[in-house]
Image 1 (spheres, helix red, strand yellow):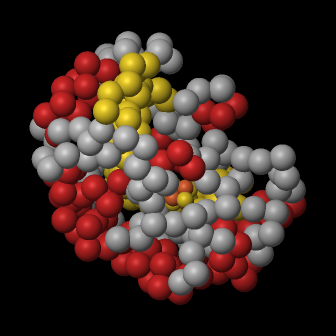
Image 2 (cartoon, protein in one colour):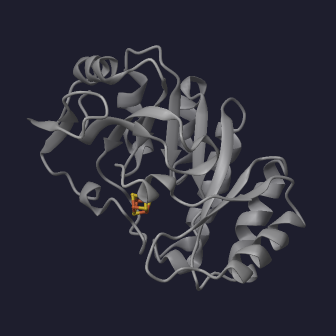
Image 3 (cartoon, helix red, strand yellow):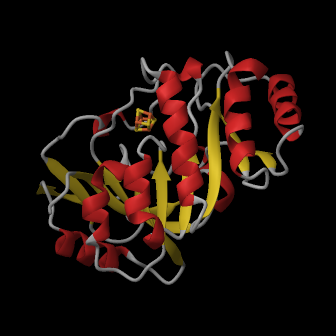
Length: 242
Ligand code: SF4
């Protein structure tokens, strides 16, 4: 089964506890959400073409028409792998929309799934082949859906499923509008699974920076219920990387 992929390249993971690790990124197209802060809006619709880095880390690309076959994508991942590369990041868009394709990838490298956590049944289909799961929990102020309660329920279920087999952490984007109340549902959801799951607060990358006092207040609030609360910004943006 072919898939619509937007780009394949080698760079540094810029988010969460694995920031700084080299990865081959496979960025899938399509997403069921519309987060106000989305930094990959080009993936929301099918573009019909994929850019593929010609040499690992070069930032130079060639373009190919999509959809792409699994054998071709597996081959490209192998060509973009380097000695210091650690994982294949399945990102998007929403990679779980392509679970059937992911199952057919013929590679032995560890898979790092970056998901908005909205599809528990798709997560169940691929959980056994995922080494690391980076799971978002969205907040009401992200304005990503008209059905927030349903999304939250699915997110908690997805995290619970992936946490059975993969090293799992949760990432929550913090905005200037974020309050203890809006964050509380995410905290309770993670606590209901396992209070030791790393809970990463990621300040939104925008001109409107959140204050350190708000960040510390939210960290302490989460720390009342969870054991591993951290604040990590998007480091690849600081280095001007993809
Ligand atoms: S889930 Fe990710 S790709 Fe989808 S709209 Fe939100 S930030 Fe963008």
